Image (tube, helix red, strand yellow):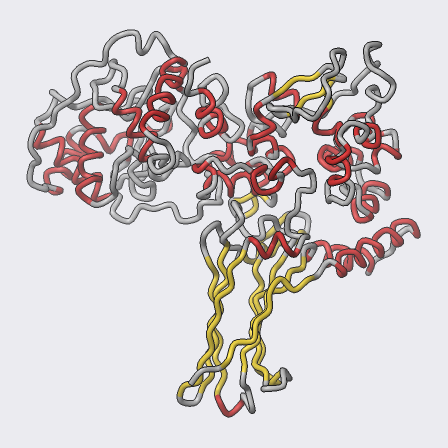
Length: 595
C-alpha cells in the first residue's frame, strides 16, 4: 500500500472515492462533481492538453483548493511530505496517464496591460459566447450539447487553484486556463493559437464577468444535483458510493442475517444487545441511555404502529431499527439502533481498525476491520438525506453536507471525534446540556446612553462541526430581558431570537426561516429600550434556552388535537411529555448595565 493511502482515506476518499473515480459517498452533495483521477483528465494544468499535469500542478490543487467548489485548501493542514504522498496515490489511479513525462509548461511571458475592451471583442470573435453565453452565464447555444456544461462565470468563482484571490491572481488563473484548455471538456487551449497579449485580454474579460461571483450559502446543494437526483434517484437512496466492501454496511436495506454458522457459540449467534454486552460491556452501558437505543421512541411508535403506510414504515425503520429481523421481532425492534444494526452483516462482525487489546482473541469469531468506521461518511446514511429531498436548497437532514463544507472536514476531524471520542457509544448531542455548552460561546454587553438602554448578545458556534443546531428538530432561544437589582423582570423589556430551521408540512415541506449558526460563525442580537420604560433596570439577563424536540412538540400537539385511536393517543401524550421535559437552560448571565 502506498504511504499516502492513510492520508487519502482521511481527507480525499469521501469525495473522490475508493477507486479514485470521483464517486465517493460525498459526491452527490459537493459543489461541482469531484474529479475522477481514474479518467486521467485534469483540468488545472500548466501543461498543454494531452499532457499530464506536473506534480506542482497537483500540489497546488491540494494546497489551495478550488474556489467555488467543495474542494478545500489543505495547505495549512498537510505538510510537504504528506502532499507528495497523496500525489503518488492520485497518480496511481491512472498509471497510463502518468507513464510519460509532462510536456513543458506553457509560458505566457511578461504580464500585458489590462485590456477588457479587447477581451470583449475576442469573446465573440473566438466564439467563447457559443458555450459560455453572451454575458458569461454558461448558457450559450452550444452549452446544452456539452457533456460537461460550462460553468457560470458570473455567479461561480473562478475555480483554478491559486494562493490568493486578488484581481491579479484571478487574472493569472484565467489566463492559464485559457492558454492550456480544460482536459475532458470542450474548452480548447489557445496557447500558440493567439498571442499572449490576447490570452490576457480574454482573461480580463473573464475577471470582469466574475467580479462579484461568490458562493454564500455553503450548506446548499447545487440545483443541477437536486434536479438530476429527482429525475433519476439512486436505487437504494442511502449510499451513493460504489465501494462494495463499505457498501455492505449501509449500502441498502440490511438483509436478513440468515442461519447462524455452526462455528458461533449461542451468545455469538444472537442479535440482542445484551449478548453483545458479555464482551463489550462498556459499549453497551454507554449505548443503553442513548438516543440510538431509544430510537423507537413513543412518538415513532405512534406513527409506525397506527396507520402509517408500509413504505413509510420501512423508510423510518431503515435508521430507527435497521435490522431485517427487527421488522417482525418487537422485542428486538424496541432496541432501536442496536449494536448489530451497525456491526453485524451476514453474521460477520464489522468494526473499526485497531481493536482494543483488552479483548481476548476468538479464532472462530468472524470479524473484519473497515476504515469507514472512523470516517464521517459512516454516519451519512442516517444523518443526510439525498439531494432530491431538498427544501429551499437543503435537505431537512443535512448534517453531513454541513460538515463537508465546514472547517472541520479539511482538518480531518470526523463525526466520531466529537460524538464518539475514545470510541464511547453515547453519541451525545443537542439533548445533552453539557455537550451543547461545549459548542457555544456567549458574549454580551449592556449600556445606558442618553434615553435608551442597549443590549448586544453574540452567540458563536465554537464546537460543532455542523450548523448549530443541525436539523430542523431542535431550536435554541437567545433571550434578552432587563431586570432590577433584585432580579425581578422589567415589564415590556424582554425579547428573544429563535435559532433554528423553522419548517412546516402541508402536503409538501416549506421553510419559514433558517437562523442556525454555521461552524465558527456567530449570530448577534441587539435590542434597545427607551429609558423611560425601563424603570429600575440594573442588569440585562441573557439566556440561551434549548428545546431539543421543538419541531416535534408542535407535531405532537397537532396530532393530539385530532381524533386518535386510544393507543396512539397514549403514545403521543408520552412523547409530548418527554419533549417538553427535555428543555434546558444552556447558559444564563446577568450583565451589569454600564453608563
